[in-house]
Length: 101
Image (tube, rainbow, N blue to C red):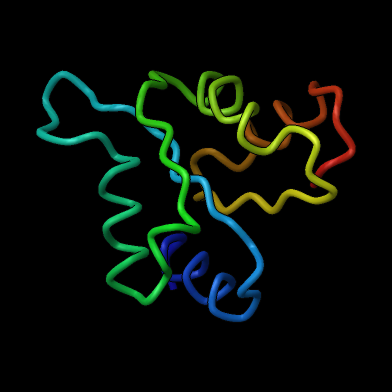
């Protein structure tokens, strides 16, 4: 199961949860990764209204910074990532002033 499939399964199990698709568009890419993630989530049955898109980030750090206004203040945050980003994501999270995770 890849991270998009994992998020879709989570979304279907927890119908109150909202998702954030975050990642920008590289110079050699035709579409922002966030838009692709959102499209794939919808194809797997997640309602569009539950998906927030952050497509301006250019790094993992910016993924957090630019997504924070969407999730800030929420009582809980679940992060779906891949092996490549897992260590960086955990370091970023623990550097944030939040109780959400």
